Length: 390
Image 1 (cartoon, one colour):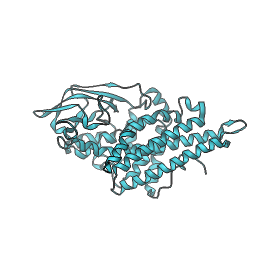
Image 2 (cartoon, rainbow, N blue to C red; image 1 turned 30 degrees about the vertical axis):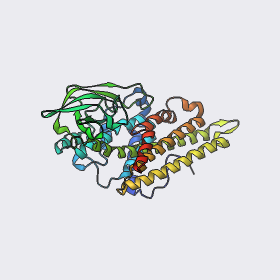
Image 3 (tube, rainbow, N blue to C red; image 1 turned 180 degrees about the vertical axis):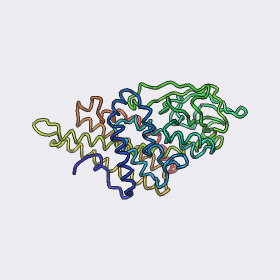
Image 4 (cartoon, rainbow, N blue to C red; image 1 turned 60 degrees about the horizontal axis):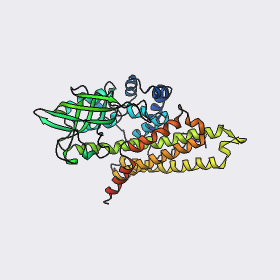
Protein backbone atom coordinates (compact mmCIF):
# COMPACT_ATOMS: atom_id res chain seq x y z
CA UNK A 1 0.00 0.00 0.00
CA UNK A 2 1.25 3.47 -0.84
CA UNK A 3 1.19 5.58 2.30
CA UNK A 4 -0.12 8.98 1.34
CA UNK A 5 -2.65 11.47 2.62
CA UNK A 6 -5.69 9.66 1.22
CA UNK A 7 -4.71 6.10 2.12
CA UNK A 8 -4.13 6.99 5.78
CA UNK A 9 -7.80 7.90 6.19
CA UNK A 10 -9.98 4.98 7.28
CA UNK A 11 -12.74 3.97 4.83
CA UNK A 12 -15.83 6.03 5.61
CA UNK A 13 -19.14 4.29 4.88
CA UNK A 14 -21.01 7.58 5.31
CA UNK A 15 -19.50 9.25 2.25
CA UNK A 16 -21.53 9.38 -0.97
CA UNK A 17 -20.50 10.15 -4.52
CA UNK A 18 -21.53 13.75 -3.85
CA UNK A 19 -19.04 13.92 -0.99
CA UNK A 20 -16.28 12.54 -3.18
CA UNK A 21 -17.03 15.07 -5.92
CA UNK A 22 -17.03 17.87 -3.36
CA UNK A 23 -13.58 16.75 -2.21
CA UNK A 24 -12.30 16.62 -5.77
CA UNK A 25 -13.72 20.05 -6.53
CA UNK A 26 -12.16 21.88 -3.61
CA UNK A 27 -8.91 19.92 -3.95
CA UNK A 28 -8.58 21.25 -7.49
CA UNK A 29 -9.21 24.74 -6.13
CA UNK A 30 -6.58 24.46 -3.39
CA UNK A 31 -4.06 22.84 -5.75
CA UNK A 32 -4.42 25.73 -8.18
CA UNK A 33 -5.16 28.79 -6.07
CA UNK A 34 -3.58 28.14 -2.68
CA UNK A 35 -0.86 25.49 -2.41
CA UNK A 36 1.58 27.11 -4.90
CA UNK A 37 1.47 30.39 -2.94
CA UNK A 38 0.74 29.43 0.67
CA UNK A 39 4.34 29.37 1.85
CA UNK A 40 4.93 32.80 0.33
CA UNK A 41 1.79 34.15 2.01
CA UNK A 42 2.87 32.78 5.36
CA UNK A 43 6.27 34.41 5.13
CA UNK A 44 4.65 37.68 4.06
CA UNK A 45 2.13 37.39 6.94
CA UNK A 46 -0.74 38.19 4.60
CA UNK A 47 -3.28 36.52 2.33
CA UNK A 48 -4.43 38.37 -0.82
CA UNK A 49 -7.94 39.79 -0.56
CA UNK A 50 -9.10 38.17 -3.79
CA UNK A 51 -8.80 34.70 -2.25
CA UNK A 52 -12.13 35.28 -0.48
CA UNK A 53 -13.84 36.07 -3.78
CA UNK A 54 -12.35 32.95 -5.38
CA UNK A 55 -13.28 30.78 -2.40
CA UNK A 56 -16.84 32.06 -2.57
CA UNK A 57 -17.07 31.17 -6.26
CA UNK A 58 -16.36 27.48 -5.57
CA UNK A 59 -18.83 27.31 -2.67
CA UNK A 60 -16.38 27.27 0.23
CA UNK A 61 -17.71 30.32 2.03
CA UNK A 62 -21.37 29.48 1.52
CA UNK A 63 -21.20 25.83 2.57
CA UNK A 64 -24.03 25.10 4.99
CA UNK A 65 -25.71 28.50 4.71
CA UNK A 66 -29.15 29.21 3.27
CA UNK A 67 -29.46 29.78 -0.45
CA UNK A 68 -31.34 33.02 0.25
CA UNK A 69 -28.01 34.47 1.38
CA UNK A 70 -26.05 32.96 -1.51
CA UNK A 71 -25.09 29.82 0.36
CA UNK A 72 -25.26 26.10 -0.40
CA UNK A 73 -27.39 24.24 2.11
CA UNK A 74 -29.35 21.57 0.25
CA UNK A 75 -27.93 18.16 1.19
CA UNK A 76 -24.98 19.62 3.08
CA UNK A 77 -23.90 17.72 6.20
CA UNK A 78 -21.01 17.34 8.65
CA UNK A 79 -19.06 15.23 6.15
CA UNK A 80 -18.91 18.08 3.63
CA UNK A 81 -17.55 20.30 6.38
CA UNK A 82 -15.00 17.72 7.53
CA UNK A 83 -13.74 17.43 3.97
CA UNK A 84 -13.05 21.16 3.90
CA UNK A 85 -10.90 20.84 7.04
CA UNK A 86 -9.06 17.86 5.61
CA UNK A 87 -8.28 19.54 2.31
CA UNK A 88 -7.14 22.73 4.04
CA UNK A 89 -4.75 20.60 6.11
CA UNK A 90 -3.06 19.41 2.90
CA UNK A 91 -1.99 23.02 2.32
CA UNK A 92 0.20 22.73 5.40
CA UNK A 93 -0.25 26.41 6.30
CA UNK A 94 -2.73 26.62 9.15
CA UNK A 95 -3.09 30.38 8.93
CA UNK A 96 -4.83 30.10 5.56
CA UNK A 97 -7.78 28.11 6.83
CA UNK A 98 -7.89 29.95 10.16
CA UNK A 99 -8.59 33.29 8.50
CA UNK A 100 -10.30 32.25 5.27
CA UNK A 101 -12.92 30.23 7.15
CA UNK A 102 -13.23 32.35 10.30
CA UNK A 103 -16.70 33.44 9.21
CA UNK A 104 -17.87 29.98 10.29
CA UNK A 105 -17.57 31.07 13.91
CA UNK A 106 -18.55 34.71 13.40
CA UNK A 107 -21.53 34.34 11.08
CA UNK A 108 -23.68 31.55 12.62
CA UNK A 109 -24.76 33.67 15.62
CA UNK A 110 -25.99 36.28 13.13
CA UNK A 111 -27.81 33.76 10.94
CA UNK A 112 -29.32 31.97 13.93
CA UNK A 113 -30.17 34.86 16.26
CA UNK A 114 -30.18 38.22 14.42
CA UNK A 115 -33.16 40.08 13.01
CA UNK A 116 -34.06 39.38 9.38
CA UNK A 117 -32.85 42.86 8.49
CA UNK A 118 -29.38 42.22 9.93
CA UNK A 119 -29.18 38.77 8.36
CA UNK A 120 -29.98 40.19 4.94
CA UNK A 121 -27.30 42.86 5.28
CA UNK A 122 -24.47 40.78 6.68
CA UNK A 123 -24.79 37.18 5.47
CA UNK A 124 -24.86 37.75 1.67
CA UNK A 125 -21.77 39.96 1.73
CA UNK A 126 -19.77 37.61 3.94
CA UNK A 127 -20.71 34.58 1.84
CA UNK A 128 -19.81 36.48 -1.34
CA UNK A 129 -16.37 37.24 0.11
CA UNK A 130 -16.78 41.00 -0.27
CA UNK A 131 -16.90 41.63 3.49
CA UNK A 132 -15.70 39.74 6.55
CA UNK A 133 -16.83 38.93 10.06
CA UNK A 134 -14.93 37.79 13.15
CA UNK A 135 -15.89 36.42 16.55
CA UNK A 136 -14.79 38.62 19.47
CA UNK A 137 -15.02 36.78 22.79
CA UNK A 138 -11.57 36.36 24.40
CA UNK A 139 -10.38 39.22 26.60
CA UNK A 140 -6.95 40.23 27.95
CA UNK A 141 -8.15 39.45 31.48
CA UNK A 142 -9.24 35.88 30.72
CA UNK A 143 -9.37 33.29 27.97
CA UNK A 144 -11.63 30.26 28.11
CA UNK A 145 -13.72 31.49 31.05
CA UNK A 146 -16.33 33.22 28.90
CA UNK A 147 -18.75 33.65 31.81
CA UNK A 148 -16.37 36.10 33.50
CA UNK A 149 -15.89 38.51 30.59
CA UNK A 150 -15.65 42.20 31.46
CA UNK A 151 -16.50 44.15 28.28
CA UNK A 152 -19.63 46.10 29.21
CA UNK A 153 -22.66 47.17 27.20
CA UNK A 154 -25.05 49.57 28.91
CA UNK A 155 -28.35 50.50 27.32
CA UNK A 156 -28.68 54.23 26.66
CA UNK A 157 -31.89 54.99 24.81
CA UNK A 158 -31.86 53.11 21.51
CA UNK A 159 -28.19 52.15 21.75
CA UNK A 160 -25.87 50.02 23.82
CA UNK A 161 -22.68 51.83 24.88
CA UNK A 162 -19.82 49.34 24.76
CA UNK A 163 -16.52 49.63 26.64
CA UNK A 164 -13.75 47.08 26.92
CA UNK A 165 -11.39 45.08 24.75
CA UNK A 166 -10.98 41.72 23.06
CA UNK A 167 -7.78 39.98 22.07
CA UNK A 168 -6.45 37.07 19.95
CA UNK A 169 -9.24 37.81 17.48
CA UNK A 170 -8.64 35.83 14.29
CA UNK A 171 -9.29 37.92 11.19
CA UNK A 172 -9.73 40.93 13.42
CA UNK A 173 -7.66 43.41 11.45
CA UNK A 174 -9.77 43.17 8.30
CA UNK A 175 -13.17 42.25 9.71
CA UNK A 176 -16.12 44.48 8.85
CA UNK A 177 -18.19 43.17 11.76
CA UNK A 178 -17.47 41.69 15.16
CA UNK A 179 -19.84 39.19 16.75
CA UNK A 180 -19.07 40.33 20.27
CA UNK A 181 -19.75 38.91 23.72
CA UNK A 182 -20.55 41.69 26.21
CA UNK A 183 -21.81 42.04 29.75
CA UNK A 184 -25.25 43.60 29.97
CA UNK A 185 -26.25 42.19 33.36
CA UNK A 186 -24.80 40.87 36.58
CA UNK A 187 -21.83 38.53 37.10
CA UNK A 188 -21.49 35.13 35.50
CA UNK A 189 -23.07 33.59 32.44
CA UNK A 190 -26.50 35.03 33.21
CA UNK A 191 -25.28 38.56 32.51
CA UNK A 192 -23.76 37.94 29.07
CA UNK A 193 -25.25 39.17 25.80
CA UNK A 194 -24.06 39.09 22.19
CA UNK A 195 -23.89 42.14 19.95
CA UNK A 196 -23.01 42.58 16.30
CA UNK A 197 -20.65 45.57 16.19
CA UNK A 198 -19.68 47.16 12.85
CA UNK A 199 -15.91 47.68 12.75
CA UNK A 200 -16.25 51.21 11.37
CA UNK A 201 -18.33 52.43 14.34
CA UNK A 202 -16.75 55.43 16.10
CA UNK A 203 -14.80 54.30 19.14
CA UNK A 204 -13.69 50.97 17.64
CA UNK A 205 -9.93 50.60 17.17
CA UNK A 206 -7.58 47.67 16.70
CA UNK A 207 -3.92 46.73 16.84
CA UNK A 208 -2.28 43.79 15.12
CA UNK A 209 -0.77 40.86 17.01
CA UNK A 210 2.01 39.83 14.64
CA UNK A 211 4.60 38.13 16.85
CA UNK A 212 3.06 34.68 16.78
CA UNK A 213 4.61 31.23 16.89
CA UNK A 214 2.41 30.07 14.04
CA UNK A 215 -0.47 31.02 11.76
CA UNK A 216 1.67 33.90 10.46
CA UNK A 217 -0.54 34.72 7.48
CA UNK A 218 -3.64 34.77 9.66
CA UNK A 219 -4.23 38.33 10.82
CA UNK A 220 -4.83 38.47 14.56
CA UNK A 221 -5.90 41.55 16.48
CA UNK A 222 -6.71 43.18 19.77
CA UNK A 223 -9.95 45.15 19.50
CA UNK A 224 -10.78 48.17 21.67
CA UNK A 225 -14.24 49.58 22.34
CA UNK A 226 -14.36 53.10 23.76
CA UNK A 227 -17.91 54.38 24.28
CA UNK A 228 -19.00 52.57 21.13
CA UNK A 229 -22.70 53.16 20.42
CA UNK A 230 -24.36 50.07 18.94
CA UNK A 231 -28.05 50.08 17.91
CA UNK A 232 -30.08 47.85 20.21
CA UNK A 233 -31.37 46.12 17.05
CA UNK A 234 -27.87 44.60 16.78
CA UNK A 235 -28.53 42.41 19.80
CA UNK A 236 -28.23 38.73 18.81
CA UNK A 237 -30.88 36.77 20.64
CA UNK A 238 -32.20 38.09 23.92
CA UNK A 239 -30.49 40.32 26.43
CA UNK A 240 -28.56 38.36 29.07
CA UNK A 241 -29.04 35.20 26.99
CA UNK A 242 -25.83 35.61 25.00
CA UNK A 243 -24.07 32.73 26.70
CA UNK A 244 -26.43 30.36 24.91
CA UNK A 245 -25.62 32.08 21.62
CA UNK A 246 -21.90 31.55 22.20
CA UNK A 247 -22.17 27.96 23.43
CA UNK A 248 -24.32 27.10 20.41
CA UNK A 249 -21.28 27.92 18.30
CA UNK A 250 -18.53 26.08 20.12
CA UNK A 251 -19.32 22.48 19.16
CA UNK A 252 -19.19 23.18 15.42
CA UNK A 253 -15.92 25.10 15.86
CA UNK A 254 -14.37 22.18 17.74
CA UNK A 255 -15.55 19.67 15.13
CA UNK A 256 -13.93 21.75 12.38
CA UNK A 257 -10.69 21.92 14.35
CA UNK A 258 -10.78 18.18 15.02
CA UNK A 259 -11.10 17.33 11.32
CA UNK A 260 -8.24 19.65 10.48
CA UNK A 261 -5.96 18.31 13.23
CA UNK A 262 -6.66 14.69 12.27
CA UNK A 263 -5.70 15.51 8.71
CA UNK A 264 -2.62 17.47 9.78
CA UNK A 265 -1.34 14.38 11.57
CA UNK A 266 -1.75 12.48 8.30
CA UNK A 267 0.19 15.18 6.45
CA UNK A 268 3.07 14.63 8.89
CA UNK A 269 2.95 10.88 8.28
CA UNK A 270 2.87 11.37 4.52
CA UNK A 271 5.93 13.64 4.48
CA UNK A 272 7.85 11.48 6.95
CA UNK A 273 7.26 8.34 4.89
CA UNK A 274 8.29 10.06 1.67
CA UNK A 275 11.52 11.23 3.32
CA UNK A 276 12.25 7.82 4.88
CA UNK A 277 11.94 6.19 1.47
CA UNK A 278 14.41 8.57 -0.19
CA UNK A 279 16.93 9.37 2.54
CA UNK A 280 19.84 6.94 3.03
CA UNK A 281 21.93 6.46 6.16
CA UNK A 282 24.56 3.83 6.87
CA UNK A 283 24.13 2.37 3.41
CA UNK A 284 20.38 1.85 3.49
CA UNK A 285 17.13 3.79 3.35
CA UNK A 286 15.88 5.34 6.55
CA UNK A 287 12.76 3.24 6.01
CA UNK A 288 14.87 0.08 6.35
CA UNK A 289 15.87 0.89 9.93
CA UNK A 290 13.61 -0.82 12.43
CA UNK A 291 13.50 2.18 14.77
CA UNK A 292 12.15 4.34 11.93
CA UNK A 293 9.63 1.72 10.86
CA UNK A 294 8.34 1.53 14.43
CA UNK A 295 7.95 5.31 14.59
CA UNK A 296 5.89 5.19 11.41
CA UNK A 297 3.81 2.29 12.73
CA UNK A 298 3.01 4.15 15.94
CA UNK A 299 2.03 7.25 13.98
CA UNK A 300 -0.30 5.12 11.87
CA UNK A 301 -1.80 3.50 14.97
CA UNK A 302 -2.66 6.84 16.57
CA UNK A 303 -3.97 8.26 13.29
CA UNK A 304 -6.27 5.30 12.67
CA UNK A 305 -7.65 5.46 16.23
CA UNK A 306 -8.21 9.21 16.00
CA UNK A 307 -9.81 9.02 12.58
CA UNK A 308 -12.20 6.32 13.81
CA UNK A 309 -13.17 8.52 16.77
CA UNK A 310 -13.74 11.44 14.40
CA UNK A 311 -16.03 9.31 12.25
CA UNK A 312 -18.08 8.15 15.25
CA UNK A 313 -18.61 11.64 16.64
CA UNK A 314 -19.32 13.05 13.18
CA UNK A 315 -21.97 10.38 12.69
CA UNK A 316 -23.55 11.37 16.00
CA UNK A 317 -23.71 14.97 14.79
CA UNK A 318 -25.21 13.91 11.45
CA UNK A 319 -27.94 12.00 13.31
CA UNK A 320 -28.80 15.00 15.47
CA UNK A 321 -27.27 13.38 18.58
CA UNK A 322 -24.53 15.91 19.26
CA UNK A 323 -22.61 15.08 22.44
CA UNK A 324 -20.62 17.99 23.88
CA UNK A 325 -18.42 15.74 26.02
CA UNK A 326 -17.55 13.45 23.10
CA UNK A 327 -16.70 16.48 20.95
CA UNK A 328 -14.56 18.00 23.71
CA UNK A 329 -12.52 14.83 24.16
CA UNK A 330 -12.29 14.35 20.40
CA UNK A 331 -10.60 17.75 20.17
CA UNK A 332 -8.09 16.66 22.82
CA UNK A 333 -7.48 13.35 21.03
CA UNK A 334 -6.86 15.16 17.74
CA UNK A 335 -4.50 17.77 19.17
CA UNK A 336 -2.46 15.10 20.96
CA UNK A 337 -2.27 12.93 17.83
CA UNK A 338 -1.27 15.94 15.75
CA UNK A 339 1.46 16.83 18.26
CA UNK A 340 2.79 13.27 18.44
CA UNK A 341 2.92 12.86 14.66
CA UNK A 342 4.52 16.27 14.12
CA UNK A 343 7.23 15.45 16.65
CA UNK A 344 7.92 11.98 15.24
CA UNK A 345 7.95 13.29 11.69
CA UNK A 346 10.55 15.86 12.70
CA UNK A 347 12.67 13.13 14.28
CA UNK A 348 12.50 11.09 11.09
CA UNK A 349 13.21 14.02 8.79
CA UNK A 350 15.98 15.43 10.97
CA UNK A 351 17.55 18.76 10.02
CA UNK A 352 15.35 19.10 6.95
CA UNK A 353 12.27 19.41 9.16
CA UNK A 354 13.87 22.23 11.16
CA UNK A 355 14.11 24.47 8.10
CA UNK A 356 11.23 26.78 7.27
CA UNK A 357 9.33 26.09 4.09
CA UNK A 358 8.16 22.54 4.74
CA UNK A 359 4.82 21.36 6.06
CA UNK A 360 6.09 19.40 9.05
CA UNK A 361 8.07 22.32 10.49
CA UNK A 362 5.05 24.56 10.20
CA UNK A 363 2.60 22.02 11.63
CA UNK A 364 4.90 21.43 14.60
CA UNK A 365 4.83 25.17 15.38
CA UNK A 366 1.06 25.32 14.95
CA UNK A 367 0.22 22.45 17.28
CA UNK A 368 -0.02 24.74 20.29
CA UNK A 369 -2.62 27.10 18.87
CA UNK A 370 -4.77 24.11 17.96
CA UNK A 371 -4.41 22.68 21.47
CA UNK A 372 -5.48 26.04 22.96
CA UNK A 373 -7.92 27.63 20.50
CA UNK A 374 -11.61 26.74 20.71
CA UNK A 375 -11.07 25.58 24.29
CA UNK A 376 -7.79 24.33 25.73
CA UNK A 377 -7.12 20.64 26.36
CA UNK A 378 -7.56 21.28 30.08
CA UNK A 379 -10.89 23.04 29.62
CA UNK A 380 -12.07 20.26 27.28
CA UNK A 381 -11.34 17.56 29.85
CA UNK A 382 -13.11 19.54 32.55
CA UNK A 383 -16.12 20.10 30.27
CA UNK A 384 -16.33 16.38 29.50
CA UNK A 385 -16.37 15.39 33.18
CA UNK A 386 -18.95 18.04 34.03
CA UNK A 387 -21.19 16.67 31.29
CA UNK A 388 -21.39 13.35 33.13
CA UNK A 389 -22.19 15.02 36.44
CA UNK A 390 -18.81 15.05 38.22
